[in-house]
Length: 131
Image (cartoon, rainbow, N blue to C red; front, side, top):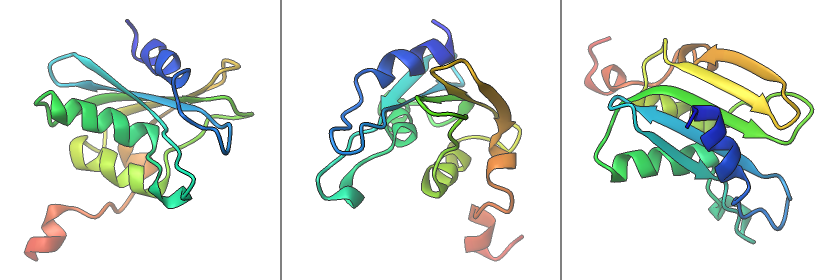
């Protein structure tokens, strides 16, 4: 199954009763295996989770810690980028050159990378003082 197809399929299972804005995401681990996630809303809005976070959690739960490719899809006019928190999460497990495909259910696509989505990312070198 293609990465975007996995994101498209899981998007249909998103739990979005408040916004009705369903998002699907899929990440490919270094093994080649695909992990998918969808957004899950909560009536207390800050307690919901993003599709990208769900896909990353599934990957980590399966024992992988490296993302080599990402796809995100939503029903919107243009491709929807990950929120700031998810950009940092993607950067935790991917490299700056890791490809990210942002897509809409209408067929619009935007190819980018983790590094382009999050320039100047916060990394482990900031914590150790060795930049």
